[in-house]
Length: 87
Image 1 (tube, rainbow, N blue to C red):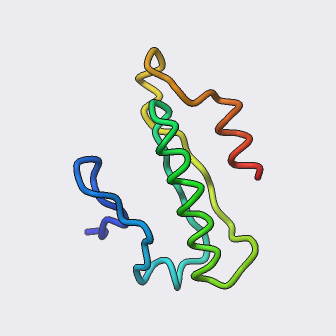
Image 2: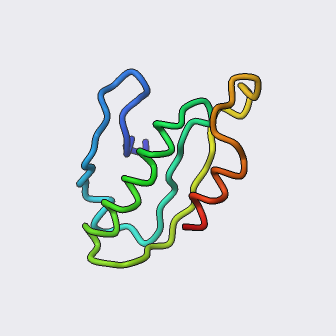
């Protein structure tokens, strides 16, 4: 079975995350909650940290907004997510 890369929502955050997948991965999927601006900030920090670990200015990554079923509770707009993914 696959190993979890990040903690569950009830676990404390794992930043900086310096697991074996960070050093050897070729591309990354970073997920944030559309109900939490803080989680988008954490996603940006994870991307920046991964770039530092890999000694790169850029890494191939996909930023995914999660909790789309909670649209009424959305706090991160689609445009904010797109802007973060483009930066």
